[in-house]
Length: 552
Image 1 (cartoon, rainbow, N blue to C red):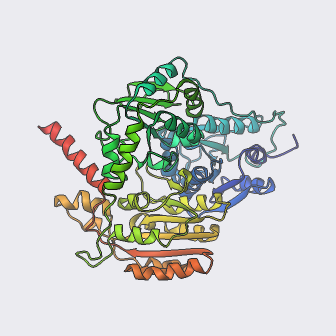
Image 2 (cartoon, rainbow, N blue to C red):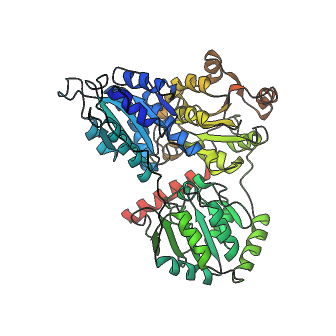
Image 3 (tube, one colour):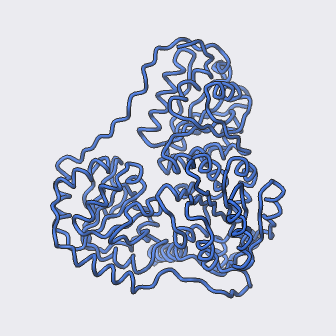
């Protein structure tokens, strides 16, 4: 290999895996960024270090391709920790390239970055002069094979030194291995004998590319299908019930609760997916197929550790078509048509502000069909998957849900915008609280996006807290936010914008779309805090029931 600095070697090896880097420049990564440019990597600057990892995370979720974030050492690194924790918990491969303390020892301003990362369950790989390339490759392949975030640390005193020569072979192709062994035979027999089978797919099934095999399997056995929010529409087709959990309809949830055999493919069965224990009937046999080491929910009766795509393909060879469940699909179709959907919302509210349900429905009629939706965390989070068409699983990016954080929406939008290469419009949905947390990266989004629409559900409050704790009589003063004119802020940063106080005000957005939808449009939507989301009501009811069980 040619003579390079340690930072240059890191960038050279990294360029075999990634094309995009997001971050903020500082003392600890300035040499890496210079080398990255020489290697042809595209650098997208963000304005807060937390956005570096969140943008790389969203880039992967939207495209399936690895990206890197980068920060300086110390405060730059610690600023990125919330997004790093989210990527670890969500099982998203991300590489954070960061500066670190010199090899000669920590300076007064240094912190133990590796120990901090370990506390988040993130592995740290610290490069050396003699193995900078090998260690970089080890870090990247660890992230990809284990689907996790890693820290790639460059000690400050090594960054600009010449790296030793290394003979590195070309990266080996990642092997997909299954198998569930004889357990798949048991699965096949259970599915073949089911009268009311259900296949529930999660993001793991999407990442494995298992959608076609699972869809064919469902058709063969007459199963109903559903997806988690992060696998929305993966199994769309005959018998599709939509999203499982609090974002779904009660009619669909009732059908899921009647299933006698449930195949869970690549889903972790979070409390939200399971409707806090009420989604599946007590007599259902639950089978889970995933690459995880162990089961993730006590309802699972049979766990098969396997690649979902390979396992589904194997099941297709083991399961013959049958008529046992034909009536199940026919009945489900009739009930779905006859049953109620999501509430349409009201034209009038107690405070005269917009009903978020009616707003979401009105936006669905305006937003471009070719869209990728990015969401921050917050009370509003269900309105998009409930009321908007989300074409593909990768078109719903929710960075923050695994760690239950808010404030990563704008950062995520930057990464997703860079990932879009097919003319889609990025649509960011955010609450006013989370938007204010990440406000500096509105400028980053305006610079990065070819076509972006920002929808702010502005209720002048932290809405989830208003419903959870204000309703209990706790003081609402810390939960309230002064009315912010996000439209004015957006215009100052170079976006087009409008304040939306009625559905008719969406005409400004429609005009912008009709003119080509170029650049960024911010819709500052003034919504009421008097409407509680169904998913939050479920959560509150489950919390009350758990407390009653303990005290009673």
